Image (cartoon, rainbow, N blue to C red; front, top):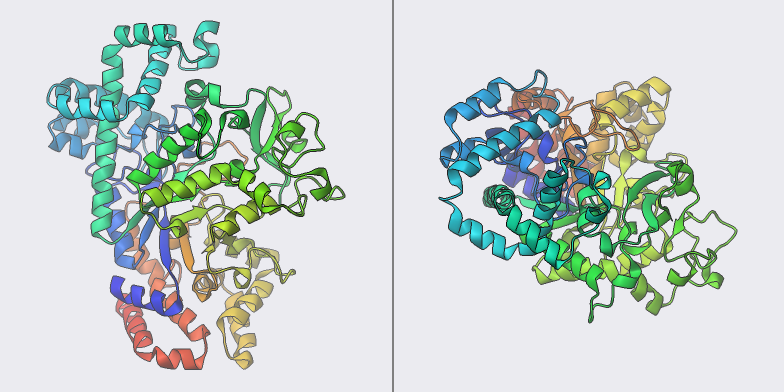
Length: 607
């Protein structure tokens, strides 16, 4: 089916067709599942093959950094080190690094329900024990590649190791609870002393990273052999650990958050660090903060084929608020954009926009707060973002494989910076406003460079959203809109809309078919939307054990075959058929052979 889907996508002008799934959500196989997804596990590799077989040409992974024991969010993970929770154990058995019994015991002891919801804390403790065994058995055998790895990654490995050396000395993993002298990165003499005292610890941590990086290389190669490109995620936040490691690069008095918006009317106090503009320098003469960004992005792109840029506003014109506020929600609501606030005394020295370029009658978080900029001002806003683009070009990546997560909010400075690189935004169609023909989430308002999707990791699956449309009485309006997009013959639209409105599964399927209509040429599908799942992966702005834990069920292939045939999951050939017919009778006539093959594929699955 892969080749057939590829021809249909090409006929429709679709450039990329990507499945989004985070490591922790990958399915397990009963033989080696320990309670969390791992790309090189049997379940992980199985999903990669499944996605390729359906015709996807890429996988969008989440951030790959190490997550803490208490916080499973990949968006709070480390910047340089890879998440050792994603190390699959069966390959370690095959390498002789752990015993067969170790894997068998780990599989037998996995918590009940972890095949459907990842057991983050259990796997965190498990991996510490298992990787300690691997270190004992493999340190000598892998001494040469370990030395080479440590030399090639010396800077970030040292910072990682020194953090955990001090955590051990203080018997406390949270640096905010360390003695005052340890709360900042140590000077050269203290670093030397710490490395001497904790040489074994630093080597073991580097060994674990070597294993994680080697497994990623194998997954990357396997995906590439199947025709799948792997995209990573440049999260805008930094981990608590990295704030200590790179604290000198961040502005001490400011924190990054999200302003009030259509998606989150109250705003979100993320409490992330903000790179200090005084430490950026220029592209020709980079300061330490710019050099850090270059290393970070360069490493990501060297290991992947593309990059999702999380909240690019944070690289261009971050929404900031004062640090150390008791009421952080009030603080973020009273925040301002770092480079667009010449009217704020504390930020005036960092402003790029002038006072006469502002629409002071609007709320300061409004997209039109800044109404005009000169080319030189755009250059200033673009300093950090341009570095990301330059890194992509240096790695030979197509800049169109930079996936820019712009949602409901697109302030003028961000729009100008993206336009200079020909990059689009996200169009999340389940959020489309039916009363506003200009709504940013309506598919017909997309641009060719945009990425379109029914939902993302921060939304409910389209299957549960469609159920709510039926329950709250808006199904008919959504059905009319979809019929107008999908049914070329006006005389048939009314009856088609009535047919769609009676069944949430039909509504969801029509929303998914709409993704292929254009003008957007890049389609992304979150795994819950593909598989017909109704559970939510993450609810933004909430803290819950359910967040970041949802997994692809182990029997997903059998369930998908049945559900897709019945219209309860994303039936790719059916959606492509509908999209081709939506282009009109002449387009369908030109592609009659392709339509016949797609319909035969659907019939094969039904039988």
